Image (cartoon, rainbow, N blue to C red):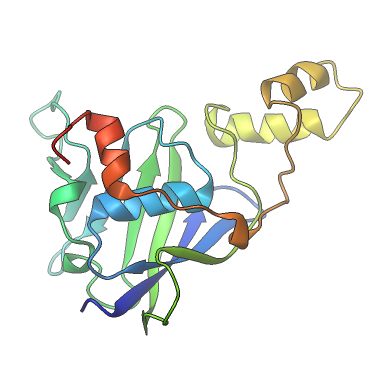
Length: 201
């Protein structure tokens, strides 16, 4: 198991042309580890809550995996802690899909598809991003609708909001640019410490 790698295709939903990434991660990963890899490959900054939703192996019910939170309603599903659930326990066959939602305000929904198994290559560091297209939308831009408006504004230098938008974006943003080789992956343990301030890890 330690020598096997899972290859996923991550596709951001409701946006055309598609924004997607192809990533390879170790089979031993937890769902938290996978979350961190998705964040880094897509270009998100991990500033908001997230949740995976995946069908159980048998039946129509879904399991929810992410960061546990207080349930406001009795029928609200329990969210299992991603760091306690191994990825392979649910991604157990090629073609298995999950929904990965990031930022419950902007509501960025991704399809996560297990498309291949492969063996680790000697000298290659995992996780790695092997392919993809288009830049990730900026954080807190207002979801799919806000992103559409953003693209409209920056495509027209005469737009009344052009300068304000460019300043908000930090001076530049090319929605068509993505370079897989430029992706840098953070340590999931380090990210967990940053999120939960646990000095014991």
